[in-house]
Length: 426
Image (tube, rainbow, N blue to C red; front, side):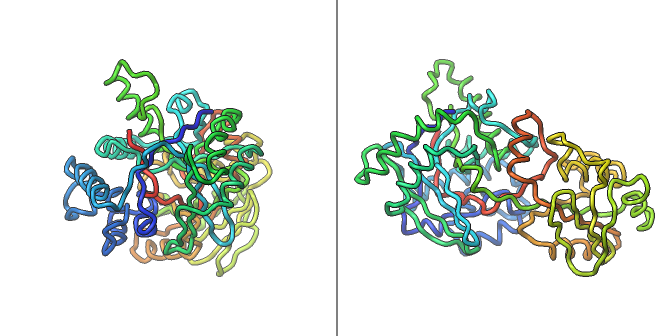
């Protein structure tokens, strides 16, 4: 696969911690407004420019994207951001709960994406793509790195380890306790390890047969569509233009951790509690109820699901006849979708059905209880929540290798890459 260094727009070291922000899509509009309050340098101001307008302004209006460009230009003009004078690679290390992962920050080719050298495992929604397409077009820059993974490479590991012995460019802890460190690799570096890594990474990645999108399917699809549109607008392009590439961080698969992506359904599709339990775990149901308890119940193995209903937790296990060796059909999230959510609860398309809500595992089981109890109290319920066992990284790679797609919201990666540390001008 192809990787390429780029001349990043990045914050000065003294304000990197103030600029770095969680990805735009982990917030709803109200949460984003609260997050930027009193944080003028936070990149979320640029990533979610509707935060600069009253709540009644359409967040997809042209003036909103124009505001993003205005803020981006202002931060470049006032010295908050600097632009590299020559292309560089970077390393980006994130440490959470004493576990670290280190990725190579580089640009990847949109042709590798189109030719499935960069593999996908998730469908995208057109509305979410259009938002990032407009954002990239307005800024003439990609600002959210795509989270990629690859099967481990000893050659890359050796280069990375040598660079990490040098002094980092950035080193700070976020408000959530996650530590972020960045190293810069230029062609002409005073640090021999950095210049050697700069020269060696292209050759090392050329031997990596493929990469996988771990997180950022919408950002990747949007960057590729902008690149294709600019090719069409510039028929004389030769392939070296920056719009032919998109900014990524590439991590070895062994370093990654996937958390569960849990589900809350607002009602039982007209069923009583007893009718639902019979459909779920009766003679023809896909699950058996292993036990029931009042305290939180987190699944500890594949095929196990924790269910919260009527202020009680149920430990569910998939019946053997409903298990599958198929890379997609055998996923816990697939079994739940195809055997419970669709046929019993009427959630045919979880991407568009307003009755289902997805809750990242980082929020914990208490958040599932809170949501279900609130819905029940409002009279809209009874609601039900499902706590999933996390999809494994091997399952993700196997699905992508098979050219298949997972159900939406199958994986939740932590820690999240911060936005604002790098921007790629196109």
